[in-house]
Image (cartoon, rainbow, N blue to C red; front, side):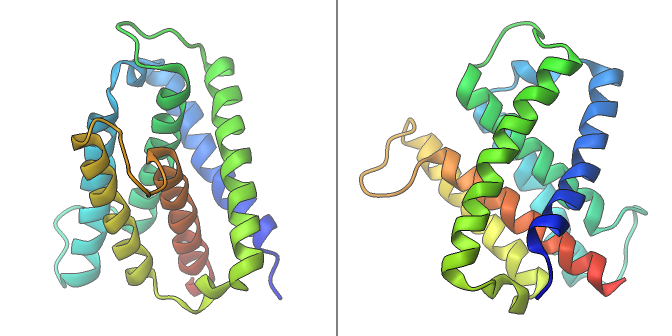
Amino acid sequence: MKDTSKQYDTVVAKCQALFEKKMSDYGSAWRILRLPSLTDQIFIKAQRIRGLQQNDERKVDEGEVSEFIGIINYCVMALIQLKKGVVEQPDLNTAESIKLYNEQIKITKQLMLDKNHDYGEAWRDMRVSSLTDLILQKLLRVKQIEDNSGQTLVSEGIDANYQDMINYAVFAMIHLNEAN
């Protein structure tokens, strides 16, 4: 059995390294983004991945991996926004942002470990295209919840959907890494 926890950490380290570099370049400008804006950014990334999976021709020389990294990082930003709220001006330095990033990843990874135990690593038998479709489905759910002012009657909240998207994207990246 492959060590999912270690593979997960490897993928997240790659995502966090890019997040940290972008924090150096741009600061925490992302802190002004409202949740629907972050959801739309994630949606664009997921749609691009689906397009790459379906189309033979590519006009931009970036593959699925960079888009999955973007999904993971935007989802972490959204979880931070849910926790801290949106601000009018950037308010976090790199160290604070990384601390919050790691807090959200720790919670999300534990969710993955719990679900992975119960589902018996079923994701390992899934295709990357199916994981992409599940991310898109979660995005449509989040958009509906946002349109309902964050209210649900019986469904999990926005945070659980962002966490699931992170985990699906990590699984997809593990599959892509194993294919190479």
